[in-house]
Length: 381
Picture (cartoon, rainbow, N blue to C red):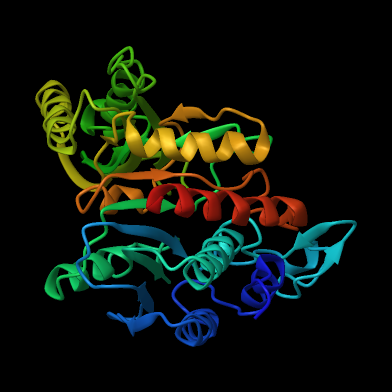
């Protein structure tokens, strides 16, 4: 049997229109391929989300290497702005185009191809486990979380895990992730008293309170960074009143902030701080202030050690580049895996992810498969 072509597999996955939460045929394709290669597969669908776990080797083996990734993609957006069919998987001048080409059907194809070739050519004393979700780009409540719940119930265990998200900013091999910042979103509602703009003393303008609150939050220095993280950030992302009248003081206004935080904070500690700042505004302006908070993930770090060293050495061997150990960027499903086992992330250059004409160099996909294959050989050596 010839080696699995990761480029052809990526193209086949791109042709599956798996926009969250639609499965689109991507997991069916992978399940068929992996079962044919001797992997035990199970669909772990929950709610509207399709998920797949595939294991080669003994369940519960103390040496079980895991990969994690997703086949769902973000919407196309303005289809007329694309110069190619978003789900056509067209290759031009050595570049593969399509939604998911970068984020992250290429990563899934690379680790699936590497895993199949590895267990066929050099069957290891251990297990190789692939966890693939259809709900990473959405709320992520029934994706990797559901897979981990299933693993706990059925005594499945990864010893270590590599998430195949695109991690390199500009060129192949330059960065891997050993942690991620936490993410918190807070929606504020401030309610005052409506009135005539010519008689502001007869009203209580909620915008005055909201603007003061947003200014205080935006100007506050959360920290100056930690050993492995940059400084935490808070961004005011919207202030909405929806008042079409120029002579009316509104009764209510809304605003939203997003915080990306390092390991000096927790979602709970930041929630308490936001509430205390809102309480100060309530007392100062005599308004009503309500908060709604969503913590998308806590910050985490996998300390540099055996796992990150092994991945970095494989990257250097295949690319000639020593990857930087980073915690930058947004969230990923590694935030869930970190409670199951040590986890790091390494993948392709992510410059075009979520963009019109999303694309990736064919050579990078082939290189990524080689890196993942070397990691497997090194882990089971």
